[in-house]
Image 1 (cartoon, one colour):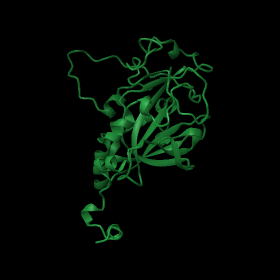
Image 2 (cartoon, rainbow, N blue to C red):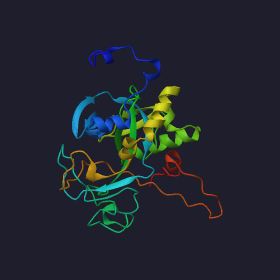
Image 3 (cartoon, one colour):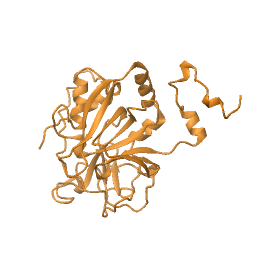
Image 4 (cartoon, rainbow, N blue to C red):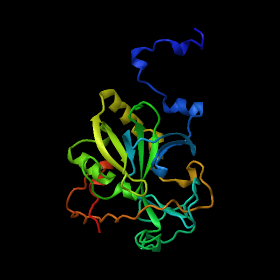
Length: 283
């Protein structure tokens, strides 16, 4: 059979839902980073730092297959330059202390850092910004590529109606129903009342069995694990000299709840469990 006609043949039923595995992607050189940017209030599909296409609709449906269990932080000393992807001066994956790779951290801990004080940024904002990373699939292509989605503070914290929830509230809501986020198609929507890019979330439908199996597999893939770990050195198009990111309106830092007594058993934590322990009380 000619290699020109092979892929035009009807696929066997058991192969119709099978996409590229990690080995094939690696061998084919298809290892470039993919992410969804919300710059300018528009959904932009980025590959290796280059905008491939954009979706100007206010809403977009995704499947969340993995996510960082803690909110990270990033600090940029310089001014923001539109279109530049730059390396932060200081950053933290766990939100507690600067990453060990930073040669000149701003402080030993994030809590006591001068860049974490209100007013250290523009206006009453903090110079060091909150972020959370998710690994997502496009709802109409759950057998396709994993994309990174980085949420700014306004998309993480706060309260909203059940059809327009910030991510923390959304994760708690889904968990309270006894469901897992990766079993759902989630709608993310641009908040038209916000002066800076802000996403809200709501559940749309449950995945089919085949869709869920794909989502589960994708969530455990190297691409998903890479998407949720903050590593500026491997980000697409990153430059050595940092510039500050675009201004994001400051929101109240979540208040941690008191720890449980030492005699209580410590439950196993997963992505939703950790989110459910966060407080959404505004300061």
